[in-house]
Image (cartoon, rainbow, N blue to C red; front, top):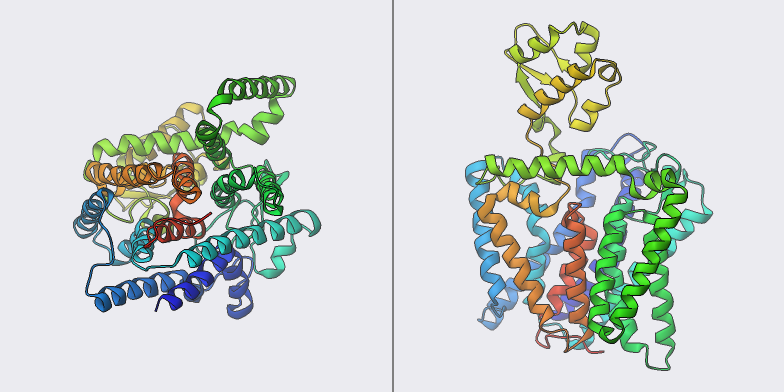
Length: 500
């Protein structure tokens, strides 16, 4: 049984980083998807990873029945997870009430945690643990190699021949992935086999957290492994830069700073001086050409939109203290765009129309009907509303009235923050126990750092994930999150550590 779990684990970790690429290509050649069409049967290709999770859960159950003993050692963080899970289920029953929405909510919020608990109960040997970690690292580098080849040697539209979409820098849950994304329509962003550059940035950051402690371990030794790992680490840094993912950059920097605190306490003053000098250099370069840096690196327009989503969703928590229900916030809502439309009272709209908005402009903004008491907005999100060309031509005071009407009647579901999303779904109680679960899980690995480099890697990866999660729905990316929590799971097997 354990050999089956190991074989499945090898396949799982090897394929996960290639998931988005392979499912897009297979859908194109097997199901006939194209640049603007993704058949519903695509689901049966994409669901392979959930099938693996179910198999691991069945193996966990088999282990329990066979040994007649519960396979898990219970820790403090497990109690917090159990309470959070019960709150989430109650929110699904009493607030969500829609079975399909609940299923998608479970997929995004719990699939990686179900995997974590299943793998914890399977007693992998030390040798198998090491091999699984190496599979993850090798698969990660194969992604970088393919991505760099694609980025530098193949034409930008190459992926169109493999079923990717020509709608550059866009995302639609019901259409193929964009062939690539750009910065201000000019600089292509590195995405390799992932669904986008932010997703790849998250993966590369996690990959780096496993390379850095291992590189540190081999550094004093005269071994080819030392130079291989050092070269690999700098290759990750280069690829990470090309993603232009600010959240991933920040997660990587936080990881480096914490690693430095662990290993370079004697040189802390020098490290601070180096960081200050680099910051001063960047500030000087920025002063020389501020427009370039604002548009290409800091992207102030994108920042304002992120801030809008985060601020709006945070304020909404006070009007929904028990949450809105599992699956009714975050990426799951993008699977049901028809459920996220915004309606406003006809009387409120008529007050704005009295400000001499012509019918052509009106019909770009609303599905207007004299007989309806509630009128639906045509845009599906605030960004679409702001960018309606005819709306931009209206007086600023009228635009503000329309924006205010939208905000008064809209529940923002995309927080651009993983933790706020959990609070949105499960309320203050659910969000609190979720944070306590993650805190004590992270503390568990922090306490084991002195014992093995693998625990240090896990600790750094969790801290990096939390940092990125402040700006993105980080754990919704299955390829990286499932890989990470699989590795977390095997660290709890009978040996409780991976040998150097």
